[in-house]
Length: 139
Image (cartoon, rainbow, N blue to C red; front, side, top):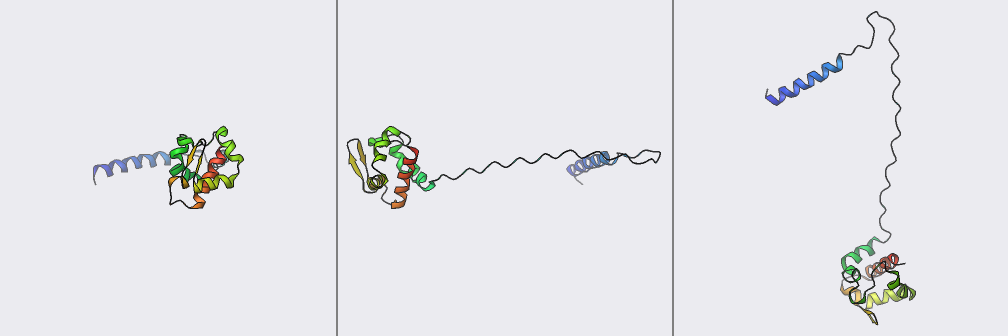
């Protein structure tokens, strides 16, 4: 046997000896005392609710990968998500107009929007989801 095995065996022997040395009855053979009442079991706390997926996870993803390059800093007049003053006049035009400008591009008084945010490979649905995401953050 190696040294580690002997140490583990000795520790296990000491633990088992300590557990087995308790005597619950009396030496005179009288009735056993009543077992102690079990401790009340506390109800397990309810698990924390799982965080909900964003209502528009696809839009958030496209925003973070593409749109944030300009919209997070207001580059070229891009309205920053969450800025209600910048978004209010745009939102007032309606989602159809915002979707069209994002898909086809737009040049206005305050700046310009390249078609598909400059990412030509984005699908229409992805572009529109990103617009919807920014609008939802800005209302």
